Length: 351
Image (cartoon, rainbow, N blue to C red):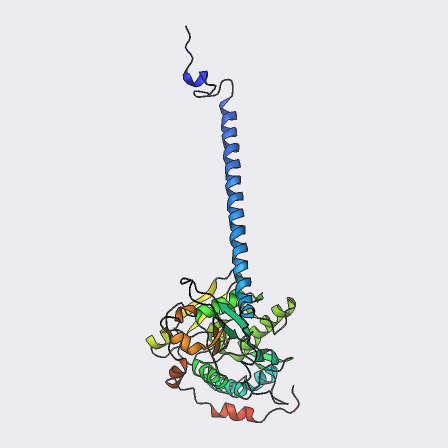
């Protein structure tokens, strides 16, 4: 008497399917595995889409939080002096400074900016809101940042310019602004309406030259104009930031740089204090942040917020940051009276 196995009595194959060649079974298994993999990919894609939508929602909430709280950045740049008629343009400044050493050029740039030689789009600050990352009970902070990095000249002819650390601190003190932290730089990139792609130039001794400044500025402008972006929009990604960090007090005086975010949000430049305080090259940008900020809709000094051990985490991912103005007092700017004198006589015909 033939006895059927339990598997066969229940209609399941005990090994090789009856009458089905092995090659067919293999192909069926592969088809099943492919289908399962496709389902997993679909599931991950759906999950990723939900994450992206949630991230975009957070960005929208962050960008609109200032408006909802009644916070306004109007007037925070009122300390900037007006640009006088006949002030030197960006291209003219570049021509005059072409043969000047970079330290003297730095003093000349500072003199022009202190005199108000900035394009009009840098006279209106933009709100950027930072929400607590860990302690949900803490209120959000809104800071007011310039829409672009510092530039010298007119609306029609301007040049983005780097500054040494002491010059950047001196300018910020005069205008009642300061440098951003790494966390603020990341928030600016996240909430910027336009992300420009970094365009590094070949490394070398020419990085600090006026030629490199002019070439890189032209690349940035070509990209901005191709996208049809107004100069007054909040844009990010095209330069590294000079930043405020506790490291400035942990080492001998050095400049701290960070950022130059790629289009995927990853920064090319990690936080670095390799260079001395007077170093500045074409890739460095100074995006000033007003000291006037808002904590839960109430006015607050950003400098005091940064120094507060309990609240500094809202605007810094490194803990409290000291008074950068005090740091500036310990770092003297370079001698460069000749450069300032060179630009004291202004071109009457350039606007």
